[in-house]
Image (cartoon, rainbow, N blue to C red; front, side, top):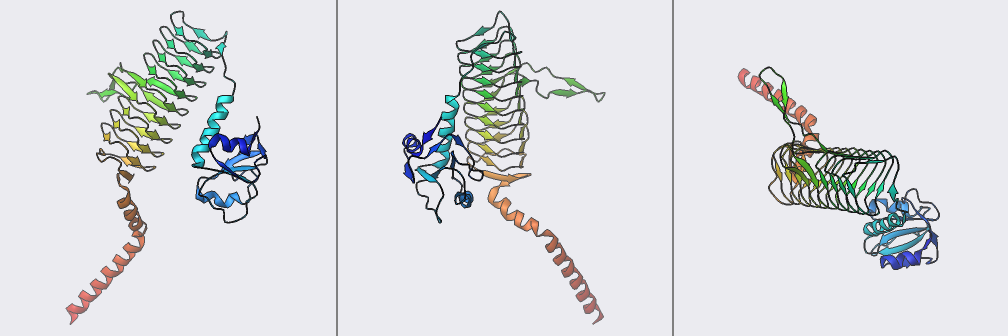
Length: 349
């Protein structure tokens, strides 16, 4: 569909700076902008691309003042990033929604499915499963025994949900996600072997959780591994058994959380972060990418970095010194040599 700058501004409660009648029918990044597309500028670091972008319309914040003439129409909004998110969400809602159960899907007679459900080819719904209304299950998804899927959830191809797990309403699981695999529980034996500890709990995802491709959430040994409402997990994340992640926490790719750790609400965890087991992370904590967390973080809204991670400002100051260690070592070596020479001179005198 096509939209004019005026229509976009009206939808976003924005203002048009330029030709209100120009038309767009697609989106593009500001660096790769093409005619007929809409882009946005939220990060000042990308401002240089505004002056030569090929995009027809660019969303900017209302307070933005260009330093050069711009080749496109601007739509000024309160928050360019939030506005582009709203437009992209609108576009997704306009896509046709698949419905119906493919004849090559298998649904156990004891399973229950709601209204307006889509189940794609070669998906398997096991005994006792309950599928809510308006759920979309793409091809090759496995749903185990007694699994519950809430209304309006979407399971992309290749998702695997083991028995007894509960998925809330409005959840999105991307391709290859595994929910409810066994936790890593093995008891060492006297003969240096390991005895597997049965994992008899489950996983609970509350409403509006989104999990990226090839991430895994292990079932609890006993009780539940719990992902609270609004949590967003990136791709390739490991959540171990009996972990609890608080509401609206976001975690970037390749992070791993060991067993029985409790993460608070509204935390932000960067990529490749490792958190050992049985810790507590307070609400609002921010953990920089590639950090290793080995002790509990009890201060709310703390910002930490490093491995082992500690207070962000101290880490930054320490890192400045760390980079200077080779020069400092050379200086110390020279000073030691000079001191040794002075001692020799004093002895001779």
